[in-house]
Length: 119
Image 1 (tube, rainbow, N blue to C red):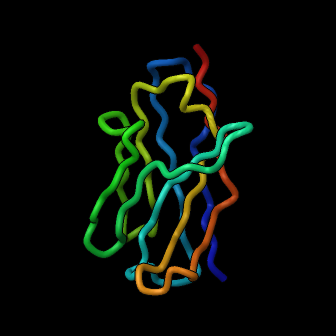
Image 2 (spheres, rainbow, N blue to C red):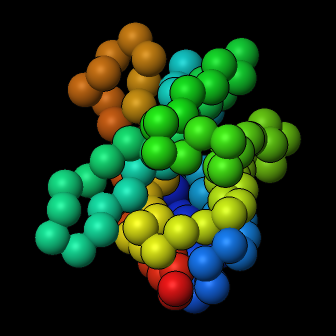
């Protein structure tokens, strides 16, 4: 059974930093693109950043470029999101996602972790 478990969320002041983790288990993820999404109250879920498990190809949303860094530890099956220079508009529930690159209907989500940035 595939599990994605996020951790590392919390309350931080504007300008501060947080590091989110997503522990992945239940299968090998070499054919997967691992992503972070977020959903703020009253808004739709939006893409934040992604990395392919096998070759480390990375993409970012324009809103987080230069502030957030996505990475993975293949040995520990863990995805990370380092978030610096946080802004109040970064406040959201952050979700980890795993999507098969060759079968897009194979898709897993974590339960989410709350990030709150105070002004």
